[in-house]
Length: 51
Image (cartoon, rainbow, N blue to C red; front, side, top):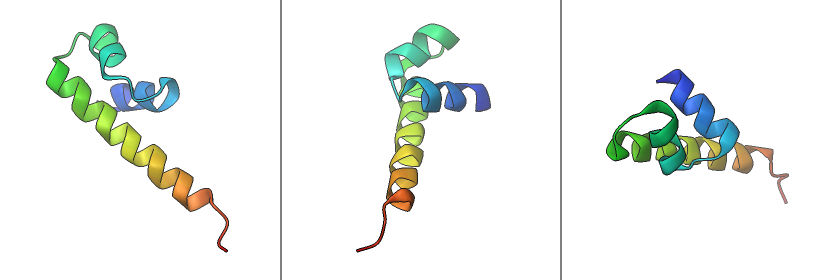
């Protein structure tokens, strides 16, 4: 699971890519992509300077 999330964080949250690389179901791939997208968005919000 960590490798899947790491791949999604490094390559971008692309569910089709995750399904192809890891041979997982589309549902699992979508969940991993969604988790990665949430982490990336949270990280971007943390890096924004306050106004």
